[in-house]
Amino acid sequence: MNERAEWKSSELACSDALKQLLTRHSVGPKHLVPPAPTEEQVWLAVWSALRAPDHQKLLPFRFVLIPDEMRPLLGELFADFARRSGKSDEEVVVERNRAMLGPLLLAFVVRIESGHPRVPPHEQWLAAGGALSNFLTALHLMGFGAKMLSGRKAADPAICNVFCGPGETLVGWIAAGTASKAPHPRQNDNPDAILRRWQPPQGLQDAPQ
Ligand SMILES: Cc1cc2nc3c(=O)[nH]c(=O)nc-3n(C[C@H](O)[C@H](O)[C@H](O)COP(=O)(O)O)c2cc1C
Image 1 (cartoon, protein in one colour):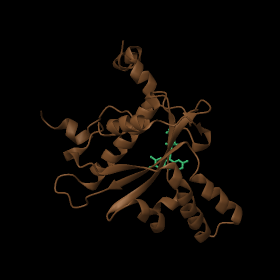
Image 2: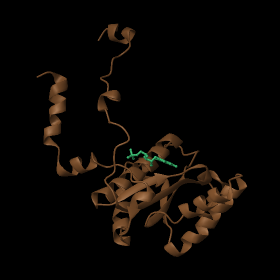
Image 3: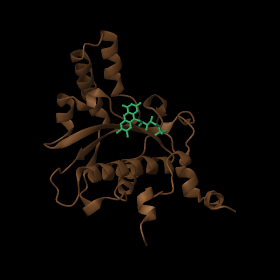
Image 4: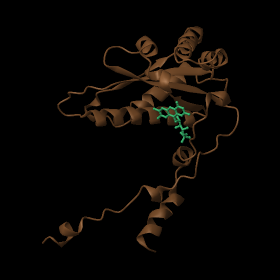
């Protein structure tokens, strides 16, 4: 068996958890119906987010639960952004309704400490991304669908300011709930496209050992 085939045979030893992980796909808010994850399940997903690698444990991210009764208020902010962006009345209605889609809605906020002596910004962003990924995967493992969404409105100062403090970035919103239909992958994943064995540059290979 060559090295590569040996590597690939590890699929046979795929644990149930890993099989589950390999079937996570985002589910858009239009296809999310009740029941929503309970607060305890959200708490577990947040706990999972805390298991993502995070250099110096800076916690450069946080989740904000948006209570149902606050959704109309968020809808007005979305509608206001759409109006300011020159959208038609119909499009404004669509934008307003986006705040009501999905049984559960959270905002995802990141705070990057740019002058940190040990942890550069890209590592902090990666920690936040890992946390987001763990959060979505945990929801999937508990049987829920979810999707991370942003759009131009996430960068709008009027919307940003209602979620963020100074120095924070509103990444966007996570819609979660029960998938009303089986999610389908965007494309076939191909690990070979992003996995390479290191080939040192020629000069380095010729150097005396
Ligand atoms: C930070 C972030 C923001 C995103 N914003 C959007 C968005 O506004 N609209 C969208 O359709 N997908 C957005 N996506 C992509 C989806 O969340 C999702 O990853 C994508 O549709 C691929 O689906 P998959 O997760 O099943 O591979 C965003 C992803 C990330 C990480």
